Each structure stands twice: as C-alpha cells, then as structure tokens.
Length: 289
Length: 163
Ligand SMILES: Cc1cc2nc3c(=O)[nH]c(=O)nc-3n(C[C@H](O)[C@H](O)[C@H](O)COP(=O)(O)OP(=O)(O)OC[C@H]3O[C@@H](n4cnc5c(N)ncnc54)[C@H](O)[C@@H]3O)c2cc1C
Ligand code: FES
Ligand code: FES
Image 1 (cartoon, rainbow over the protein chains, first blue to last red):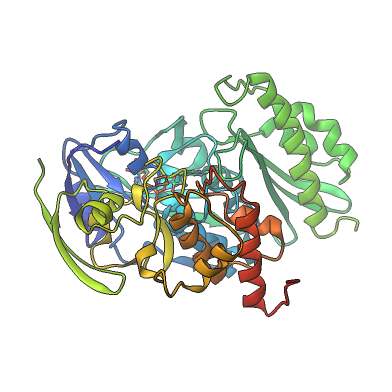
Image 2: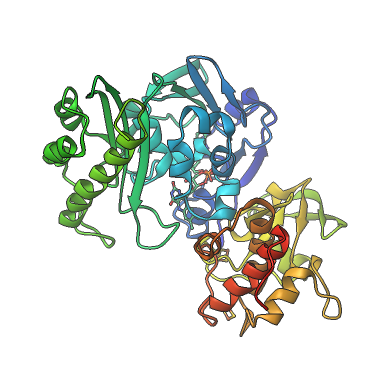
C-alpha cells in the first residue's frame, strides 16, 4: 500500500505544467483523491507527477453572463457552497452532497472528477445535464469538448496525455427551469449504483424543455434523448412523466458487476428518473403548486 | 529511489523542515518522521477516515495526500488538540458520552467533528450521521458519537440540552 517512486514537479503556471507534461510518463495531480488511492494500490505508477494546485486562477467560479465558468481546481466543497452556482444551477449543490465525504470534498476538484471519468461520478453527469463544455489546454492552445465527446469509456476520456482540463463552461438555462438530482448508493458517500439528473421548463402547461442525464449505466454520463423527445410537448404532469419512462431505458445496456445486476440498474433508472423529473417539475415556475 | 525534496510546513503550531521522497504519504510523514502517531492509518485509500487531519483549517485524508503537497501549509493533528489533563471541548464531549471504546478511530473523528462544527448546520441527528459517514468506527455503533456531537452542536447554537 505504498506508491512507487516518482519525480515531483510543482507547476507555477499553466505553461510550466504543459511543459512538464511533455514527458513519456507524466500525470497531472489535482486533489489526489482518486489518483493517490490508485498509486497506493500501484494501479497507477507514473514516473512524474505534475502538481497543478499552485497555478493561479484555476480555482475561481466566474459569472460570464450567458454562462458560468468553473475553474478546474474548484473543490467539490467550494462548489457545494457557492452562491453563484446555487442561484444559477441549484442541482450542483444537490449533486455534490452525494460525492464522497467531507474531507474528500475539501480536496477533490471538478477537473479531477472529469479527467478521472468514473461513469458513476456526479460531476460528469451534471456537466452532461447542463450541456456544459469542458475547456482543455494543450501544447497547441485551447479547445472545448462537449460531455458526449469527452467521455469515451469508463475511466477513459478524449484528453491527450499532454493536455490539461482548465475549466468547465455551463450555459445558464432560461429562467424558470426546474432541476433535480438523485442517486442510489449502498452507503452515504459511495459511488452511485445509478444516478439521475433532470432539468425541465414548462410553458402553457406543457413541457417545453426536458433533459434527463443518467450515471452508472454506460461508458460515461448518458443523455436519455429518446425520453427527452417523447416528453416535450406533453402536459406538465407526473402522469405524463410516468407514461414516458419506458423511453428512459431505451438503448441502455448497463453491465452487471459486484455492486448491482444489469436488471437492477435498469429498474433504478425508472425509479430515479421518475423521482428527479417530478421534483424538477415541482420546482419549475409556471407548474401547478 | 527518486530525488529527495525539502519541505517546510507548520505542524501543530511548530515549524518543521524535512527532506523527503515525493512518494511519502502525509500519514507516514507525520507518524514515521515526526513521531506523531496519533494520526492512525486504517485503509490507506481514503475510505475509513482514521487518518483525517486538518490542512490549512479544513479536514483532509492524510493517507491520500503526499507530504510534498503539504509544503508551505499549516497542519493540525490530534496531538495539537488538548492534553490528557486539559482536553479540548470536542475531546471532553467524547469522554463524557463514551464516544470511544478502543479509540482507533477517535483521532479521525475528532478532526472531522471540528470541521463539521465550523461549517455545518447539524440541525438533526441525521445531519450529524451524514457528516460522520466518512469515518468508520467498529466499536461504538456510532450512537454515543452522535450524542457527543449533538451536545457540541447545541452548545454552539445556544440550544439547551436535556441533561
Ligand atoms: C473514499 C472515496 C469516495 C469517493 N466517492 C466519490 C463519489 O461518490 N463521487 C465522485 O464523483 N467521486 C468520488 N470520489 C473521488 C473524488 O471525487 C475525487 O476528488 C475525484 O474523482 C478526482 O478529483 P481530484 O481533484 O482528487 O483528482 P486527482 O485524484 O488528482 O486526479 C484524478 C485523475 O485526473 C487527472 N487530472 C486531475 N486534474 C486534471 C486536470 N485539471 N486536467 C487533466 N487531468 C487531470 C489525474 O492525472 C488523474 O488521472 C471518492 C474518492 C474517495 C477516496
Ligand atoms: S487510512 Fe486514510 S482514510 Fe483510511
Ligand atoms: S472506538 Fe474502536 S473503532 Fe471506534
């Protein structure tokens, strides 16, 4: 349970970090809350660690009007108590409450969560739900990636070895949207077996906009597009949600593993989707009560 | 072996400088270099909470933090709380409520409870249990730990307890 030896580089700037990553076997370390356990088990044995924690400005949450920019080093605990995020995306704090435990939330970062890409993790799901863009810096400058392109397979992203996640841009949805998140895990703080996030907007008593994102059932966070399309235009009622739930499991092929069977995961998709959609509906303005 | 690096930090108010291998975990640094064996090690992958310390005023797992990352920071361990003759308030409450048996988990719980009392409402016992969920205790069944934290939270909030 001790990590293998490595060379340690503390980068003082993004340029220094990118230069240090130009190496055969280097890895970024942010909060270390996923990487260090893997190194303790020797599942990861990088020859060089590039510590990005001292890079200025990566730990800010900024209001850019049409969107909010969250720096890669923003900690889960910081996101959970941000007034700006609470005002624009109340679903963030609701989801962060399920991430690990107090001490881990104090150090773990959004950039690390996205780069680690656990298919049950909360941040990837939230970014997919909110149509966020992941901003990546590399030797040739910056690029952005949508969640659907970024998450390739469990623990695999489209990040190149010499690239760094620098921020996430979340577009602010129209006023009056309701959002909700929920998950099922064996114990508080464990990774979810299945998680679900919803966003809805109601106009004239019908669903004008519907988003449903699911975790723990695919290679990364999954948007239930068939369900979303089916519910848009239907009356904004719990009955309409229930009537469309079969679409939520369409095309899903979750794996059976130590934590849950595929059948149980599919069952949870129905239960949790119904729950978050009803809650999001109750929170959307213009919906009854 | 990789090149050693020099680190300078504050531990329980004392300045410390040491030369270490980058792969040294903060938990091993505290226990083996500084002989501060009050920080316990259980799982070494962030799950059990036994190694919880404070880094710059917030709780953190020492077993999944490299000592080299603590360069320049202010660390507090259980040795930096009270003494046997002069326990701090959290230690007193644990003693009064029998919130420990073997004591293996206790240093980690004490550090977690300090963080909870600083930043969390703890309105209900469920809130307390949720806040403590990252620390495992194999002896007490948690009930007495929850009672100790209830007393501390009520005292903080000016609520009169029933004893
Ligand atoms: C007991 C326990 C329970 C947990 N439970 C949950 C949970 O329920 N839900 C959840 O989401 N997470 C959970 N986590 C993981 C935690 O949220 C981590 O903080 C997170 O997954 C990784 O963030 P980090 O900043 O610690 O990244 P690190 O551990 O530092 O890095 C993780 C990976 O990302 C890479 N990386 C980090 N930052 C960047 C960057 N900016 N650009 C490019 N690559 C980067 C690293 O090279 C590494 O491969 C848990 C962890 C523990 C120990
Ligand atoms: S020893 Fe650090 S959490 Fe278990
Ligand atoms: S008192 Fe023995 S493990 Fe908690």
